[in-house]
Amino acid sequence: MAKAAFFTLGCKVNQNDTEAMMSLFRKDGYEIVPFSDEADVYIINTCTVTHLAERKSRQMIRRAVKQNPDAVVGVVGCLSQLKAEDILKMSGINLVLGTQNRNQIVQWVQRAQVAKQPLNAVAKMEDATPFENIVIDDHWERTRAFLKIQEGCSQFCSYCIVPYARGPARSREPENVLTEVKKIVAAGFKELVLTGTHLGTYGQDIGTDVDLVSILREMCRIDGLERIRLGSIEPVDLTPSLIEFVSMEKKVCNHFHIPLQNGDDTILKKMNRPYRSDDFRKLVAQIREKIPHASISTDVMVGFPGESESHFQNSYDFYQEMAFSRMHVFKYSKREGTPAATFAGQVSPQIKDERSHCLIELGKQMMSRYYHQFEGCVMPLLVEQQKQEDVWEGLTEHYIKVHAAGNDIKKGEIIFVQLEKDMGEYMTGKMISRGE
Image (tube, rainbow, N blue to C red; front, top):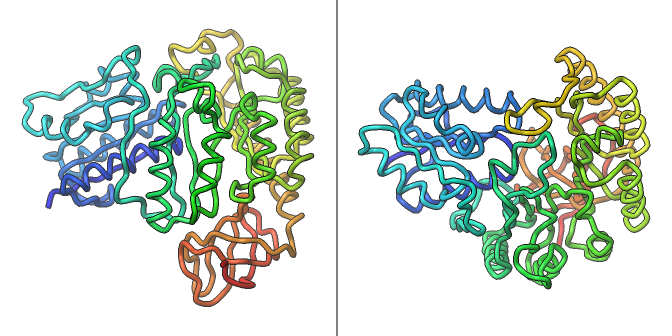
């Protein structure tokens, strides 16, 4: 049996794309093996959001070529879409495929096996087709199922390369979405995570009666689905109707990941973000009014061109005020082809590092304060993996990682735990009872 190995860089959308491609290879008779094993085919699903992601992508390509020089090495994803010619110059590459036509990945690999030279299968982004459906029949070796229902972005923030790599926003047909959800439930998954490049725009390209709330409402009617978790939602897409729906629907997790990117209005304007700090402040207030203990996490960026010390301090103060449950900190990375790459006032790597460390520490403090309010509370926990004998790790609906003590706990089940102590990255707890 031929063997295929995969390595994924970047976001949850990329992870979902990889799982879909793995499913296609399995259906064609391939055995999926770890990337560290010798395989007949290596697929590297790349990322180009930052210089670091791009560098890591190239490192993994070289590792695959070294592990088995006779293997077919295929490179797919965002880096391929934007820099196909550069990748084709790398030694040992057999196939380059971008962010389209991944449903034909097996056929392209078969062509590459007999081709006398590397194949460039990257389609032009202006020829982007409607949402590319790849059915995952064999599902994932995980406890939470990820389902991509939206692709692409039409926002064009000044620093972001994603719209150029992923194309315009487009949505998965509702009927197809619901069919996949039913398969996921039938496979025994308790939690479904919805993903997309710009998830909040779901349905805008389909019709006036289709949006994120409408598809969520239909999902919640499916028996056996216990939890739905929203992926990243842009501030402008978190409408009052969506907040109201989440507050009323028990199946939807009280966790919102809302990318803020910066807390200073001058920088937000330069970023071409369609809101200002006070808009975000009002949004958070609306959420907390409806869902008082909601988890609100975010992404923020340091070192955007022109970011002064006062801009940074404004952001720092704003983040403190927002009291996020979790904060992911990124350093600005110049991306050729984006407007921000030409902006004056590029910030030095040293200052980026200093500001990044400062915000990471703030993020830890805010997470600890958020965790602290749940000490002594009993909550349902989705069990994900065993940490040690009679101690299992899982997630609450508020995206709190818990190490729970208990006997005869099984991966994938939902149990009720009493949260005990904040340990930094997680809380300790003990099982009180099993879920229904």
